[in-house]
Image (cartoon, rainbow, N blue to C red):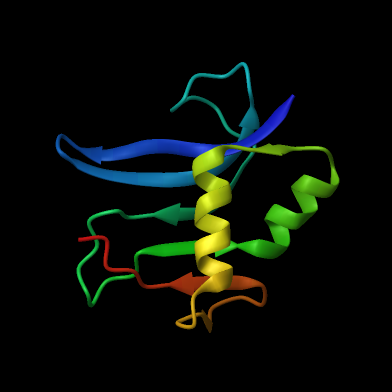
Amino acid sequence: MVTIRLARHGAKKRPFYQVVVTDSRNARNGRFIERVGFFNPIASEKEEGTRLDLDRIAHWVGQGATISDRVAALIKEVKKSSLICHGGHDGQATHRTSTR
């Protein structure tokens, strides 16, 4: 089964998460099919906190992929936020958050 979930990267006590499409049997930080965004929980005000390619996420959900609870919450937060800027590629949402 294909799932959309977070893969943890970054240094000790400085997490950085990639939003990836992967087979559910693969390890958390293991092989993935496609990277569809990132989430930086400790981003400063100047830095980008979250970027999701909503078009690709919709594509994979249409193909039968399941979404983890945390990624679903991130998608909801990005869609709800009034700070959405469309930049880079069409369909990519950039979201700046203050998580403190």
